[in-house]
Image 1 (tube, rainbow, N blue to C red):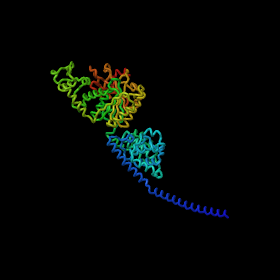
Image 2: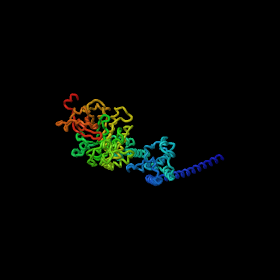
Image 3: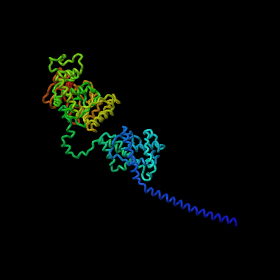
Image 4: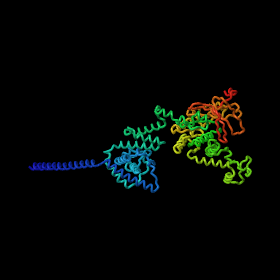
Length: 593
């Protein structure tokens, strides 16, 4: 009986326990339901766009404060931030804020969704600071080791603590696809990087156009990079629909095929169609025959008669020698005298040695040649002052120099190179083109770069580089070459007389070969105004050692004819005169052959 009572008690106890459990479970269920309801309501109340907007606003406020502080302390923009104003198409603060907020929500994602220093183009110093904080603090264990080597530590900014906490606890990962956000930002950074490196405004605009592609949103970062590489290729090409506006092209009297700047030589201008942009004109002479002086003569013609800026790049003449040669050319050139108004003749030696005639010779001490003599112990300054008082010829030269100094808008720029590579040559010409708007360049003398000295086959690479520059930037380049010192008659010059690789000829648009006629052979040649040689003239002999005759054999001309021309020159005055077409007289032709 007692056993049954205990059993009854146990039964009642168990029943009571079950009831209590039900009550407790019901309470827990209600609590859980209430919790889930609150979370659901909280999620409904969380506006992701509003959250990002507020975070972005706080970042902008701090950004403005930091920049003002740096300006006040004369501290520049941190090296982490590109010092360039990107166009609005490449700015997206919302995307940057989204990325950094997602990164704080899951800091270990830095192991996959990171940017190396050379591909990191945040526009905000604050966001860059937040990014570096993840690398060294919040996501330190997951960050790739090389990131810590590339970036420096983040700056401690107290106001960022609340922003970090808010981003770390916001349920953004439920609202956004981190991989998609990272991909879009990576694409944007690729565009920024290449926009900043683009060499021309046209190239920058082409890069901007990528963002407007119909399928841009579907493109991967790799496809964006491939598109930019394709731009680099097509940018070197001239693209057009050939049959479009063909009448306009034909009727235009200034199209480039017809309208090159005239050379100083009428027949050469007719044959080559002038100095045409987009072409490379090569000319070759033996050593010490006047290649540099010829380049100065052509450059001065373009600069001072046709008012264009010219660049001379030389590995031959130094700056001082070039200056003296240029001054000599300007003083004595009859066409330039029409501009500076000083009609006179003064050779280079007399200019260098300050040899000037006196207005009143009987009142001045003269040297053996009849020039004003510098007095013993007279300083150079005092001598110049006395020349200005006693010699109108000296004052004429000063008038010429004053006129030259005023020709700022059509200057002759000069660069002297010694040991250099093809890349150095490319950069020099490109920089002057971008900086000063140079459209006409002379390179004296065409040689292999420092890495290939003696390997003349490599010269074609240098020539090709120059040719590509002419086409890419629509500029003219004149380049001099060396001829062999051999027994080939001037009238018989060919490509085989070049001292360098013969296949370099393939690159040039025109190639002219110059060689002096020995004085003893003057009687063997004749020249004429016409290539039909209806009326011929003999070469005149002279006692002047500076007076010479050169045959110019046009070996290549993509514009047409390839005549043989005669030039009369006087290097002391840097005077080059085109006399006409040249040939050997009939009785000497058998010897020529």
